[in-house]
Length: 220
Image: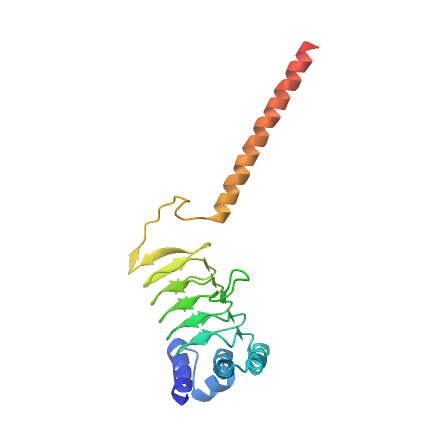
C-alpha cells in the first residue's frame, strides 16, 4: 500500500512541471486526493461494504470535484491533472501509467448491466474534455485528443481525435481515412445530408406549386 501511495506522488513530479516539493503535492493536489480516497473507497467496495464505499466517494467528489465510482479498478501511477469534472464509472478498468486531464468522462451509454464502462490499458493519455463511452478498450500507449468522443475500440499505439473519434495516427504512421460513411459513421454529417435532401425536396414541391398556379392563371 505504501508503495502504491508513493508511486501516486512520484508520478505527479514526472507529469507536472509545476510540482515543487512533496509537501505541496500532498496537501494541495486534488487529483492526488481523489486517487487516495478512491483507493480507500475501493477497499471497502471489494469487502462488499458498499454504503461506506459510496460515502467516501461522495466526500471525495465534494472535496475535489472528481467523481470516481468505488467499483472502478485503477492501476499504479495514475495521474489526474487539473481534475475538475472528471467522471469515472463503476466498471472502468484503468491500467498503469494512465493520465487524465480535466473534464474527462469514462462513462456508459445507457442502462445496460455488466461491463458498461471503458477499459484503458497501460500508458494511455486522455486529454481535456474527452468522452470515452461504453464497454470499449483504449489500447496500450494510445492518446485521445481534447474534446473527442470515442465510441469504438482504439488499437494500441494510436492517436484518436474528433466527434466521433477516429484514429489519425497508428504506430507512428498517419492513417489515410476512407471517407465512406458506411465504414466511418458520422451522425452530424448524416443529419446534415438528411436536411439537405429534405430542403431539396421542399424546393421541388414549391416549384411544382408555382408552375401549377401559373398554368391555372393562364387558363383563366
